[in-house]
View: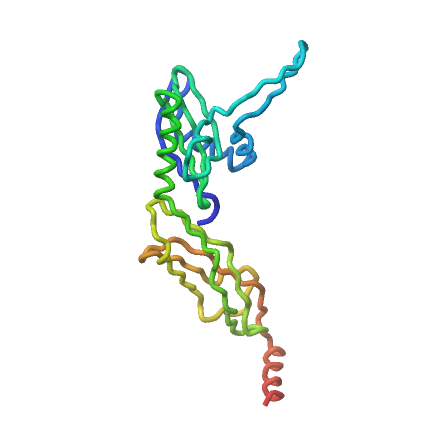
Length: 239
């Protein structure tokens, strides 16, 4: 499993015009921060002076961020995102945060007052970071060259198809993660470049967390008569 990881919490709110869930808001928030990460820059500005230009002239006024979570003491970094309130929906918040490589989204709907939405969001994020653990393999095992039979060369180098990360939602201790190289004894020529040769498997207490494909880092053509003749001749010269 690779890529960025998100957690959202579900709820429900409705009005005569709209029906939506906290999950919908979380999905929209994820789409926004994933495709337009610069939104974090805007949504974390605490105060800004705005210049309003009209036909009557130019006026400047101060605008403060309504996301008070930015100023609350937390053990995670608040990165946004959006507050909202109406008489029907009451006080709502989509809060985003980051800690130890994990980004979480907490959605609050229909809070009784503006203070409750921030306190509830902080409680959700505290719970998330108390239980979410991200494992990233930053020292993947060195790969050996793999033997090739009936080829013009006797081996082919290997490479990983990518990195590996795993998100636990139950506070797992990753110190006991086992890495298992699963490779055949040899490949038979012809061997193509980027051909799957095996996997690196990750296990924790007997549970498979995931795998990373191991690919050939080159190609090996099938040996012909002249290639075998050359090998035989080289043996005589060596002796």
